[in-house]
Length: 319
Image 1 (cartoon, rainbow, N blue to C red):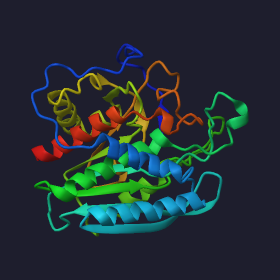
Image 2 (image 1 turned 180 degrees about the horizontal axis):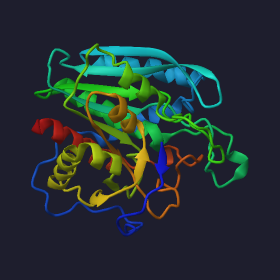
Image 3 (image 1 turned 135 degrees about the horizontal axis):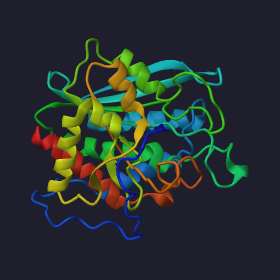
Image 4 (image 1 turned 120 degrees about the horizontal axis):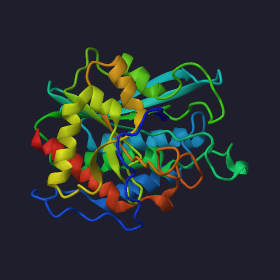
């Protein structure tokens, strides 16, 4: 994903080193969500190594993800396709979809990307900038949360149909110092939005997770999300506040971010929002470990995973 240039509409958030406290206005009991399980799902992905297109780690992680989806979901789709990346290379890819109650017309999409960045082009050490990253936060954190949600839904399915979508080829965009015309980010989401796994597919709305595992995470309201699906943003943020997560889910506009949701909104038949950590003080707008070798399992906070996971489960429960 990339940050688009835009004037900031709010003051920089507090960068306290302390973990944010739950706000005392919590009025709803937390739904069941195992933070340790979500963390284990994140770690299992990083244990394969960087999940870069064309690598053994990418292939092995795909098979593991498919096995987990088959364990929890009613129906699983392995959407294979090829993409051409900005450097004129062709790669085999796969979007992985796990569906609950596929027969139901009322549907919600929960999504994340499962690939990782092929080069650490923002690493502070220039010698590291051609090295692939683990992508513990940038990719694996959202997948880990959604796998734990799938495990919970296997036991207690909601009243609506749910499709969990893991997008491939999100993070193979140009390096920081390269300018290549074209839409080279979110290639898996672009393919899925134009070629859904079910002909004529429709959903009520979608929620994308990206970089949802860092300590002290601040989830501002991403501006493409506000533009395209303000009602869904309000639904999610108000639910988080009811659960006592108001220190994480900030009622403030965040960055203008070209992420997978942007392409779903551009090419698809429904609207999707992005829950993504925003850091106005970092210089990039993202977590300081973004696109560096420090984006590893040591920088994942179980509590943050739980904040996001319980919020999504409560959103589903309210449908």
